[in-house]
Length: 493
Image 1 (cartoon, rainbow, N blue to C red):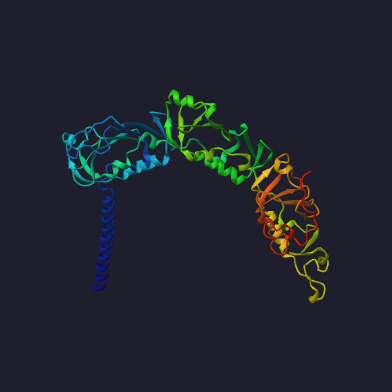
Image 2: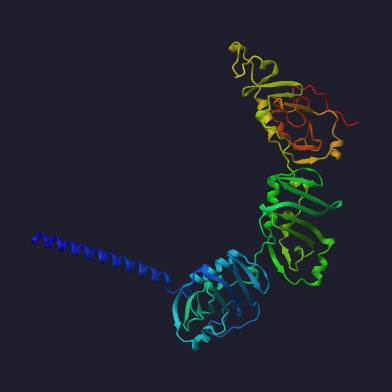
């Protein structure tokens, strides 16, 4: 019996200890929660806020340290924002998109703000704290239709604090002055600075009309099956990366100033005389048209059927005006090096055996798998430079492209300096590549390939593997290629 009493006593003790531990945990959590919420003036969840009205009616320095209303109409702000379906927009004094991040940060600063001390329990004392006519009056509306105002008054005479209060309590508090700067948002701060809405990824067509040396030129591109094609002023494939970067630049343009009511002088300056570019964007949902002007005072932009004028940074010009040269695909060839089985370099023929290259007359000494069928000491030397040349040509990009009617094309000698013929799989025709040295810059070359009327200007380095040893220095054309069988360059007749 005594034993059972001891067991019962131990059980009671364990239950008591468990209850004590549970109570202690509950107490600790409550204390932590109380500590987290202590001093918070706005016990509101950020996601429940659907409306804001921000009024700033006093000087930003907080007025006299010893008190006073410090009322000033200079720089006054009165902005109303509404949240619809999770997106913030400005409704007063203009109807326009809001900067989502700026508004989100503002709300977080308000709902996270904690006071440091209570300074008054009566509204009668609010005037001495600048709270009767606050420099910030931020009205908050929640989803349930309730409204609550957050007031910011003067700075405290000592320390880095400011007086604050809310509309649902007569109490006044002192808290960190950071609330002054973090809520000091002007209409400009709250606006979405981007002059284009939407995403660059939705653009399917692009037309740029801009002034050039010949007058006004038009660049037109369209997208089909994920590929861009230049339609004007020439028909050519577009470079997907370059077009994407251009569109990203356009959609990334931000206003440095909004002019909602432009004066007559500015409107007069935005004329064809000062036209920089007109850009039409076709998107999967709608379209945009923006016109850019370069005046003596800077770069301005305006969307069609809107009064607001955007002023842009001075460096925006390079992001706005592009040419076909900037956006065309500068990749010269479309073959894959793995598909090349034969190469002729200035009359000297080479063939690929398995994965290695040899002179054509030696290729027959190898089996299809690349094994040499003769005596080891008679194995011919490989031509590894050919592999390097093929790879270099595969990835070659043009620095510039000239049409067949251009002066560059007309002035090239009839006979090229080098001729390279690439033999592809039986289903594909051979590619003949003619090469000339650029007379104005020996580090550059001109290339013409079969099937392309254009002349491509590229770096000399892409033919660095033309011979087993690196090609001779620029200018030493006579000894450039010991295998050369092409006639010397002749001037155009």
